[in-house]
Length: 424
Image (cartoon, rainbow, N blue to C red):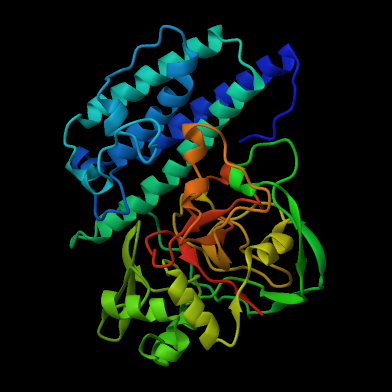
């Protein structure tokens, strides 16, 4: 899943050295996300769509063990053969899998044993790197493992937030001072002319297979909102009966809204006339200027219709974002919460803060082919009943995101850091 080229032996060794250093940094960053958590915090699962932090810690090691060490490190011995099925996620070709909704029932192995498993895999990777004569394809696979772990870093944060939100004590994951009050800049519209564009990854650096092949698309003239939709703007939608007006909703969305009894974004609470929101620093007052988050595609689409606009297609979003640097509020900021937009003129908050729902179904690009073997199950088999999101969030590692990155979730998903950018 790397734009592979033929490299000299020296170039291969240099790339392996670089990847090994990144591996160490990424593995350390994962453990840092779990600092201060109890064994109980790391073992619980709040719903079938989430996983315990302990499971994420183990599965990230399982991926490297299964796809790099076992087939390519002579003499490697598995830490525990039972882990092959216990921490397999959805790789049917690898073998048996523990049921996803029951990951929170795995009290054993202990958190200490999972940490020992990670250390076992890390030591084996160091030995493999010191002895291996890797080729480009093997390095591509190793690099995929790095980005795979970064995805699970984000899931550790989002899954813990959902878990803690279910606790009536409103536990704090990371204590931070409340940010200074500010006002969101006025929403402006940024215009783009019609024409033939190219989207999809280009260059020789890493990308997932679903970002390829790069291809041409025709776009009519369109406009994008200069910033993300705010809490105040979404509150106006609520107060005008947005959750009680079926004409604003897709049919399946309306049925879901009624069945789930939605009346506000996930994590919003009401105390009399006071609106509060659960965050990773605890329960706080709702900031009107912050971007509204934890919305389903259905809610984003209904809001856009109420606002006299729509959601962008992923081709429109990528066209607008391609020349922008992936700078923004990412996990490295430590805020772990979307920040209000700052300044005026041009597009802001394209990267970080909140994943942006698009109107595009998650499908393969023209000519798309998944990789051979079990690793080919990574993306391609999920290309149904999902919508594309773009841009990353406040829980995304900065080095993990790019303009061509395609995230995807089913339209009812709300536990991720997801928000709205209007288009027209």
